[in-house]
Length: 135
Image (tube, rainbow, N blue to C red; front, side):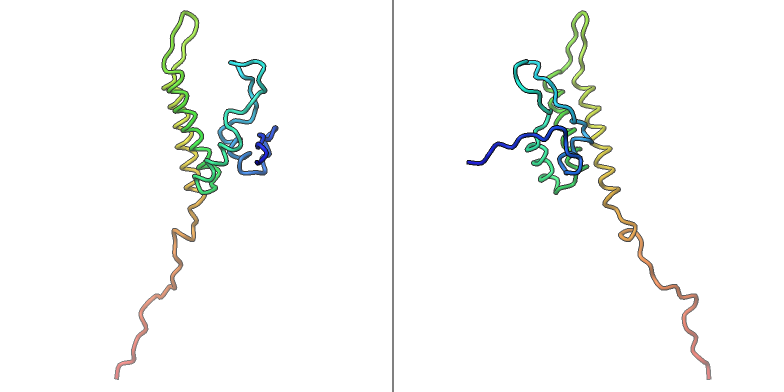
């Protein structure tokens, strides 16, 4: 039987999981509001972020984008729209913010992968075709 993997606290920003945490951001372990006796925890476990990294081929920005999409979807499902006398939540608006962040991260990941050498090709310059002598 393997030992359970514990989440690294504080995050190690030299690792891919730590870098994903920094982009989400999910860098502080939060108290459990349902069970105050439980230990504080991150929104995502290291294992969950590791699975997102694996899904996105190890690309930190794409894994962070996927995490934002997961958070946004979860927020929309849980919070929905709630309005009381002194409280109002709107899960759809929160989801929209997470999805906007995901789009930004995906765009940035594409920019990172685009190399000028892939876009341009250097070709020899010839002013005129060679002239043959006339006889």
